[in-house]
Image (spheres, rainbow, N blue to C red):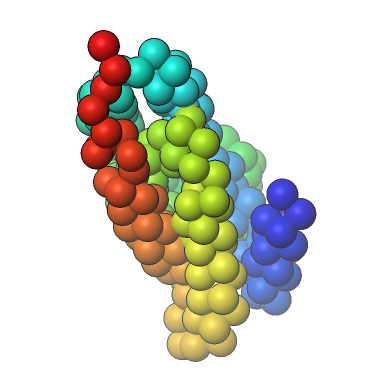
Length: 200
């Protein structure tokens, strides 16, 4: 947890170098983003409990069924939220900022438009993570989680210094999500529940 906090502090420090308009826009955008990510995380927690219960009962085939069902649920949520944020993000920003400056508005809208199409990706990670946690495979879960954080922080620092400016920071999110999702799904596929015969 402390490692994640340090990473977030570094990210915030990079964002702060772009001034109050970008800070305000990011603050509004990240609140909207967190609404969706929290929903995915809640479902992932449910799948974690589901996984632990079925491993205890020796019903390993249900884990694969749970993974597929979980993907359908999070993707069903991802589609409308991505469309809403891409096309209606500007209106939603006013919920968090009464009179946003143009810089703040542009920052928040761009942040949402860059991140929201990748909800399909990060949601798959959180479903796979739920299974890894429920199965007690915490080492691999931590590898994918820290990979995401490290990539996001490192790329944000680097890309912020390019012509992309603050947009480079937002681009770091999808890269971190994509690589970490690949790892989480790979670890899920390698899990013993995909190789072991269930008990009767």
